[in-house]
Length: 276
Image 1 (cartoon, helix red, strand yellow):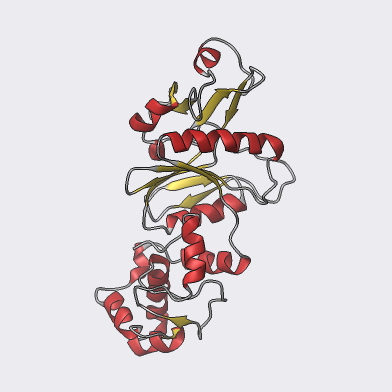
Image 2 (tube, one colour):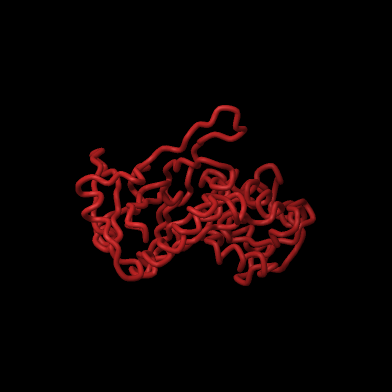
């Protein structure tokens, strides 16, 4: 859609002050392509409920193709186009402040300094409990996307700041953190929380830090208890330092203060906390 300079696209995508003059194009629930001024769309459109305004490409020969992430936050699937994007979906899905997630729900349009209409489709949208939103891209490296991505970043940061939202290029977490979260994500569904009383028993068993296997065995049969413990670790009811490999001797605690808070705080800065 970039460079399409006919009719309404050009008439509405006029330059202005910081974050002003931006248009938002999206596909409604009825399947109709619609365009509104950005400031108006922010207060009237539930981007978390929209389908992608453009699809993720399937590139022949590439090892990774588009897929689906089942969100514990929404109970729905969210499409992703890369391993880096799936990781960021996983982190946001674990954040207790996130109430909605969607992929590529909006295209932002503006007029560049050369007079041409420019556009950018952020890969992710997250809605927070306070009503604000996050538009984000998930580059595999800081330089991914080149100069066009850097120019779009400046425009989107200003547009989001104007309405009290934020735009970020989310950096991939350390490999060990990613591996730990991917393991815990396998237990994110509520079916893994176990029978009534098990979560309370886990909280009591891990009232003070103790090895994962030891605490699980004190509650009952590890085959039943460990899935519930992993679910509690995903939800944030139990905590462990995620920058260290998760194993049977990993120290786990049910205290409100997260063990190894450094990594949790870094994840929080990019949308990753436990989902309570």
